[in-house]
Length: 484
Image (cartoon, rainbow, N blue to C red; front, side):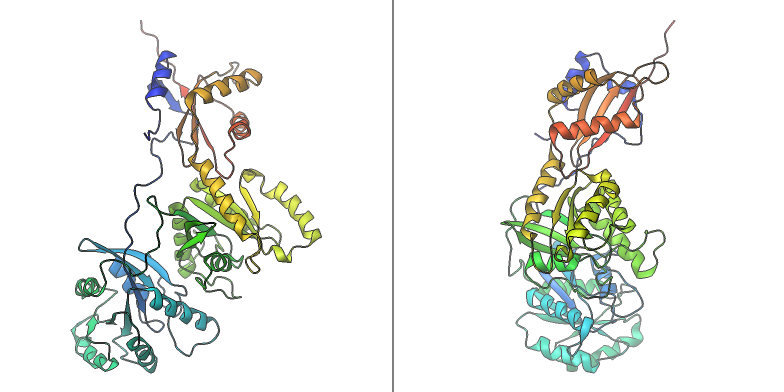
């Protein structure tokens, strides 16, 4: 049985004490919520369509149109998308996955070569491939080179002519037959022209179920967000734990723009890792591509169950690191701090880091900590046990009887401070929800912030909650006017 808020046992116990929840009002910013996180059974695996093409042909705009929402980061410059990004789509009652890729150029070098490699990997792992060509430009030498590779593919391939915003360009798409990939389907990703016909064709091409299915169990994999400031090694860590080049890694900070979703087997369990864009600025002050990347990162944190915050152990803890940790804490997600680049840490840096932890991260002393090196693979295996500990704390529920018995002893030893000449009494306590653990204290008066922190600290000493935030809410009994 899964009950939230004050369950029947809580209400009966409160009634026996003469306590009516309706007589109490929230005395702080935390509202007592009856909603509890967690979903039902995982949906069955869906077939995958890889969307490929040269840079700046409108792949991400088209993907946003086909999935019916603005997910992929779009900007009027080439090369915004670099990794392969998976998005869930639904059309005519059928689910499938669209994989947006970076611009594919067969003879690319440097960073663009890594982007092209991601597109090639998407093609090899997808159930079908869609080549996107800019109809306003026509088939270029790069398009022809890509088409030659696709003609040798053992996957079904379809051709999409995008940026067909009016009838004048429709006739020009006939010239794309020479690519040898069959009928080109004209569509406008910007206006939606022809998108319905394209979606119908996609359903015809895709199989009913994916070729390669990874079993994840009835409940589905736990969702893990990799977050941190730019260039701390998030993509390198994802590549290390996944055992493949899943994210583009480059010396240039900010290589990742869209969140990169990956199913990863770690310590005998399947996890869903999401690599996110490095957060440089506050969302309010960011602009352009950086603004949308920040929004996607915040959404990835909100959608996750546990966040892995990567910190560069070779450098002093920065304000940016603290801001990212604050985002995770405010979202109420379980937290694991991973100090990366440990292979670069010497004895002097370890001593300095100990002082920084005591000074800068004192508010998240409860977080799980792991020291790793994504480059060498050092201690990466320790991440999975830390994730399990944090998630177990995040899901933990304390029985009401045990909670109140413990709280009575704590208050007897250390009563609340007097306020306004009166000492408030704690009448009853209950755990209103999990994910994160949220406790409600029913009192006769306001409890000072310092005393609430004291209660939280004692809660952690008694019940653990390692790796999970704990929220404490106070509800003060309203004074009833005397009836004459």
